[in-house]
Amino acid sequence: MTGIRPGLARDACSVESINKISIDSNHHRQGLGRPMIRRTLDDGLGYAWRTTHQSPTARQFFAALGEETGIALPE
Image (spheres, rainbow, N blue to C red):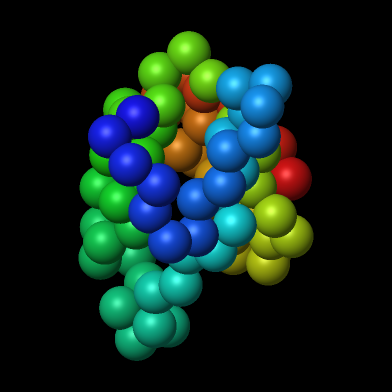
């Protein structure tokens, strides 16, 4: 990984955590969140991932992104 970004935490067991991603609701579904998360996932290849508490919209987002990338993004 090239550095720790805000909202990202790493523990000693190679588990990465996406703690927070916020996109103003007026800008949802415009492709803004995907590149941010994909970049983070690319920087952490080989890590297991988890996310913190997700809203219903975020659950759909992370489920779809997990299917696209083949990387599990559990809550």
